[in-house]
Length: 204
Image 1: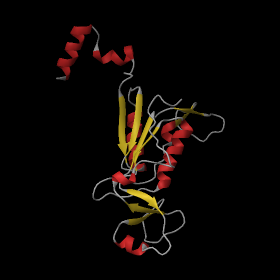
Image 2 (image 1 turned 60 degrees about the horizontal axis):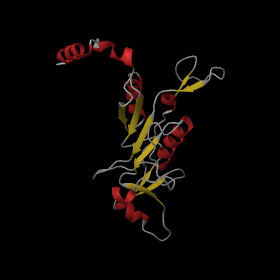
Image 3 (image 1 turned 135 degrees about the vertical axis):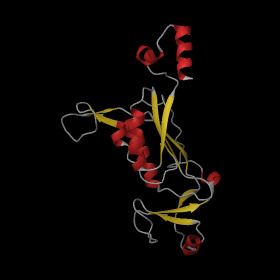
Image 4 (image 1 turned 60 degrees about the vertical axis):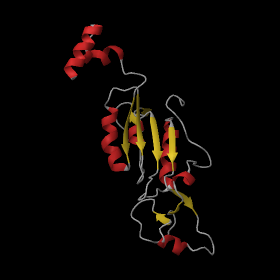
């Protein structure tokens, strides 16, 4: 099929289809994206995406199941071609053009720590990359209520402790987040009291 399509394209245009990108450049209306749920898969999938000849390249962190550092995929060294620590080289914006982020939904949905979400938003803002927060998923940040039944809520699995890093050991410590399951519709998509619905081309 590929050979047939290439022949038809050549017959119609007189151009070699294998040279199309070199002649015309990437299509401006094509967005290439990968999905990732944590740092491991971000570091595996994003470099492959960045090797493609596309006008817009993005990542969908959904469902977010752990912290994700995108810095090495947003900036590269002007001299080395990758993110280095040299104080004399300097960094330049490169790589990702759009970041979408959302929580997990469905019966077995797991909550995400609010710090993970805020960190990705801040990284995008610092690099001038559009950030689109899709939803919290099934869970939203909550607080322990004086006189409330936090232990009972946790036993009923409607409240969970989420560690900023590492596995939950059942103890609430500084830096941990309490997340309450309220359902996707009620959880919504507000972050810091506002919507984040940025699209490619909307930021410098």
